[in-house]
Image 1: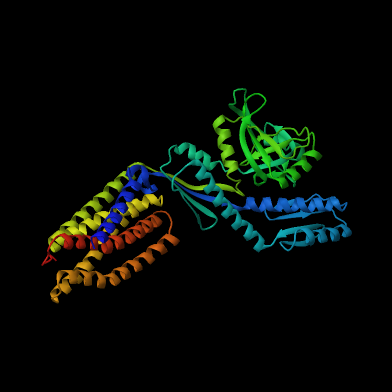
Image 2: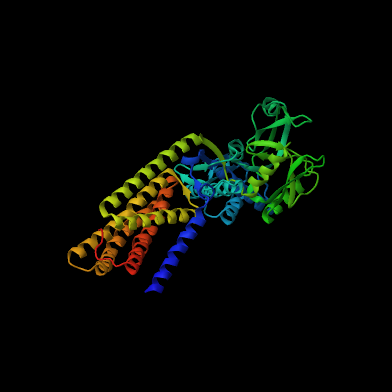
Length: 517
């Protein structure tokens, strides 16, 4: 019996030491949520039309290449984000094109003749799939970027209508984070067909003020020798993309010929093949490098380029490094629009913490006073178990790298109530056995044995609810669920194992004829 008590006591001591070691010091081991320490809240809209354009451009280019292999020259023009048309074909060429579409585009496109044109339109199910995939990929890409930024415990979740919610607690440099997140890095390479021109009107003067069906105008900054922006200029580029950021394999900061910061990139095998074919066939033509809808540079193709290249854009070292980080974490399949952006000040968090801690302290003191007044010395047993419960709770939060939110603080308070409730069940059972004439030892044994089922039932039902909150909730709701779950498991351990051990120690070393219960 004595060795058994010693073993149980050492086990409890080990749990106590490990718990304290896990969360001490508290301010460095447990992260605070957005509602407690402040941070940024963003609502992003994924421009899924960009993904449709990229997919239609890819299929359009594939069809054009296969047609050229058959000796058929095509000049397809995109008519919407999810459709394009080919005109000027003979009946025989239309038949050949239809067969190529069936062979290489599959069943994802509807092909129809509208007068002299052959129109290709994405099927609705295919377009919906691309839109949903764009949101999913954007979600994962943003998560990868934020992980590289080092923001602890961010909340990144999909909302309705192709939107994404991002919460970044405790950002160290809000301005840089804001800039990095806004830099969606939707990277495109397109062939230049005109420019640069000082105004858009001058650029389109040769085409009666309208861009050709297969081209569009993009803006670019003019820089002086020091890198400062001194004006605007415009380029006319193909609508068809040569490659996009999705074809990148890697991106690293480097130095250009004049020592200026640049971004060196390498391409995937498929991207290298396409890039080599296009650049090899267009030597002497400008290649516009477009980042987030703006031309950052437009060098002339002097030779065939395959798997490596350079992006120049009058970057600072920090801008080049940040752009590499964004590109390496994955290219967004579509652009992003910021619907909502707000910064939560830390003063609100401090106020929430103070009120939450005050509520927890007052609640704990009331529980302690009540237990001592009602159960007297036996109440000390419950209070000891309660203290250990709280220590285990914070140790668990630190172990699982959980974020403490304001609802999480409320979860701590609720855990205190649940822990005491388990002790009350045990004490009332012991009281019933004493009234039935049992000895102290027998009453304690039967009290714990018969209360155990009730304790498990009440804790398991609450635990199941907490698991559902964690599964389907977001942000603070999940924080509350995590805190409650760890607290419930700790409560079972302290109310059944620790409290029983305390009674056994007292009965072992003292002759007890009557309990204060």
